Length: 325
Image 1 (cartoon, rainbow, N blue to C red):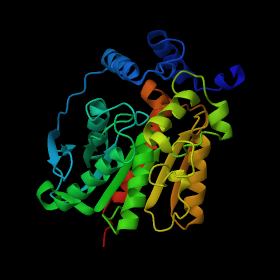
Image 2 (cartoon, one colour):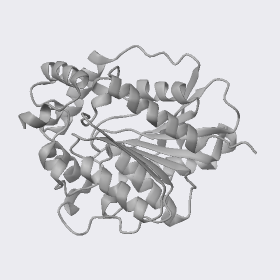
Image 3 (cartoon, rainbow, N blue to C red):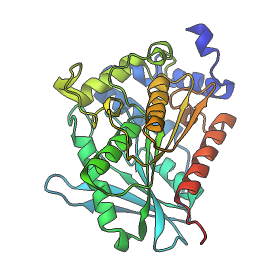
Image 4 (spheres, rainbow, N blue to C red):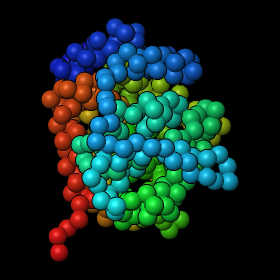
């Protein structure tokens, strides 16, 4: 393990060491009690929070009414955008068991400022209290409501990108599959960042790239257990619950995937990119040497983190811009 951890990008390694001093030697992933992990994560987020003001970005909440519970969407609209602006549909991470729109507020403000696009973050129910398909239902319902109200909300329904990190990448990929199979809404692009796709957690990277403190195979398996409930470990798993199980990837939107080469989710991300390409889907894949799971969040000012954000923003601009006639 030592020889692998020594390959972590030095700037990210330094911030990881600081994080472990606050969180403990195993990080938050070493806390097996999920409510306790949520509580501790909220404390650490508050400690590390940097002041981010939404200057130049209008923020307001929307409630999408359904037959079940209403779904909260938080819209970040840069001032000066047109009334038919591109939209990034943001699905937060947290291993299906943690995270919220509020916890990712700084990230979504920065994304809206950096891209100049409308960003809409969806609040979804968390496992294990709400196992599959609750979070997916919320994410899909939110997207349907967003597209249905595109005129009032001032977004272009032909230029919507899904954007999901870690567990959010799982849900974004599942929303794309669901939209394809249900005949809509149309999705122009999907961006899957260190996506959590494979419930088996048995790839070489899942076994080797663990124990750094940022995320572990044990915590990953626990998250899948929480999300899948009684179906965990069976052959009853739906591809909408674990997109790595999807056999048919044809007809999905153009896709961007990135992952660190020391991320335990590396192999499932690379395999999904490969299978998308085989299915005829245009794919852009980045595997970053020295990157770990969530490393750009731990060390946002690291050179590697800056480069990662730059590639993502460039990809979104290329995917959602209006081509001159």
